[in-house]
Amino acid sequence: MTAPTMAAPAHRTLKTERLVLRPLEVSDAEALFPVFSDPVSMRYWSCLPHKDVAETTAMLRGMVGTDDGTSRMWAVTTDGGRCLGWSSLFGVRNRLGELGYILTPEARGRGYATEAVGAALAFGFGEWNLHRVAANLDPRNDRSAALLERLGFTREAVTRKDFLVGGIYYDSMIYGLLADEWSGTVERPAHAPLPAWTRRRSPALEHVSVGTSDLARAGAFYDKVLANLGLGRLFEGHDHIAWGRRGEGFFIVNTPLDTSRPAGPGNGSHVCFGAPTRAAVDAFHRTALEHGAADDGAPGLRPHYTPTYYAAFVLDPDGHKIEAVCHLPEAC
Image (cartoon, rainbow, N blue to C red; front, side, top):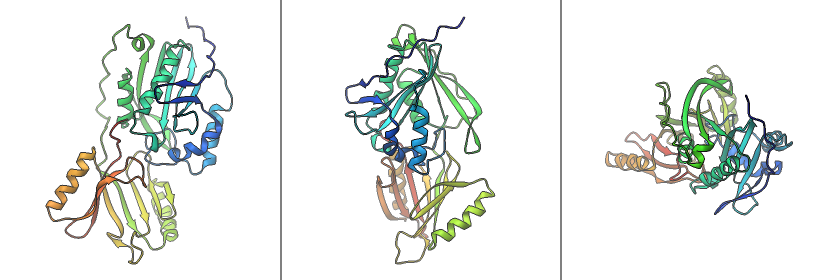
């Protein structure tokens, strides 16, 4: 016998110690476009990076344009104004719902995600009287998994190649939380073991870049050549174009940083290695200098890339520019 479907509670504003979670609106598209166009933020998301704000607007219109009583979506704000992301409950049927959340790069590293998702769960298990809330994520998304586990979710399973994004099938990791577990009246079960095929670690090669003195020509060339490998454009700007697959390392062509010299090794071209922690970036830089490299950028944040882009650059003994980067914030 299925439980009766309850009418959704009023979509009211929620308040926490530091946040005001108001109903999400289509007009929040402009504030959310930076995160939905950011390839790092979208690496483990359910769609490719947005190319313009119209794409973000269309997405929000489909999500909040009408209220069918199966979802409640809140804009994460500090004062009820500018949207810094969202926390949501959706797909609710028979007291079963799903959880969604995302934050803009500027809002990360402050504990807002835990606070906002916790408020949504309190609403779901309280006012909505939900029996279970589930969350699906990419198995490589360590930060999101850690957030769910802090909030009491149990990892239940990993399903293989069941999610299609950009023409590629990806694995999904399923987390669940029951009302009794949220209230503390029953003990949370042990996590399901991660299958052997699951890999949750930083990529060895984060990205490779080469310089060009004619970006339009290079773009047209690599569009044609890389299409044969199933690689399309991930993101681009006035001085760069990147190709790759969602969730993997990427190849980037950019104009030289030093425009007084032609594009070449160390002036537009470099190799970037992924680092698991910021401490690893520091160690990479220190060890490189101890073994004959020249400093080309001390360890530190590069917020002009993304707010959590922590990197260091060196020139190896042959003059090649080498980078190490960690994208993880110090706190989620």
